[in-house]
Image (cartoon, rainbow, N blue to C red):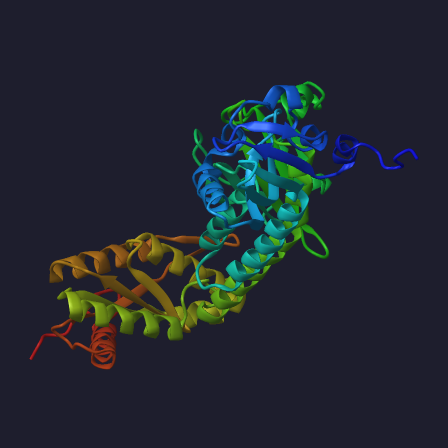
Length: 452
């Protein structure tokens, strides 16, 4: 009776998983037909060669350790590592392997889990992005965390996010990391750039050297260094496109594929939601802490910052000053020209004060026509007096608002830490008293209370 079963070699070649047999030195003795489908190499190309040469360099040490454990009698059922295919791509493998002491060979079955691994990685990335969106910190810090997460999915050495400010009609770049180019400044959304095209069209765009010539002429202009591959995906919320996420490569060894585009598109909605939540939260926090008329910090924000500054000043033995400002004759301007023009004047006053101080200092609107300035880390009393005089002089310059030329002056009271107090209340009281003293003297002047 004829054997109805096909030969063992045929059965082995029908398997979807790769079957490998290696000698004690790790050299291939046998591979079935599926080995070529999974790894890209034919049996003739690998027989007699060390299997470790095909393992991804980052996984070789632990693969050799696993091989030693298998040969010591510890079978492996779910060992995972990565191999480099013949075409240079990476394949994720899950191995079942054991050692045969009688035959002095290691037998292993390789299952391609690349797609499963990618799905697991994407799922982990989505979770990490969601967690990043909930952490404290500014938008830049959150996008930096997302950059690191994206780097676990595909090459992302050169990475940036462009956000569309619809109110101003410009693109801004809150996060920009590049091997060659510095972050660009805001640019009109109508500018002929690839980022703008992604945002306007709402479509992902993968540009390779083969596709460069097919672009419309207005998109062929290169801004910055010319990339080998450029991949951008839109950041879409439920109702609009808020920006674009872009990776680019300057090296022929790092290329992007349609799979990379699909992957970035898959996570982009989560990233867009995270960015939008962070922006909304930051906007709400800004509204709570700032005066809606002048966009300066409000009373509560100033008091909080002053307390923090005083605590640091005590610890580090630093000096600071508080300037209390009240505009002279503002009520008359309001009565004569109306509240709308008065509001414009208050906004301009706030901007002029801001331009007279350092970034480390602070100006706030307390309400009405009262402003307060904190000068942090001054060296001498004269520093506070000099800044106060600069502010007084700046406010005297005419204001051209809505076709009207207005003039205003300010009475400025000055208090110093620690001379006038180590805490907020006495410091503000001294500054307020000094301001009223300047007002009683006719206004448009500085006053510094003497220290008893």
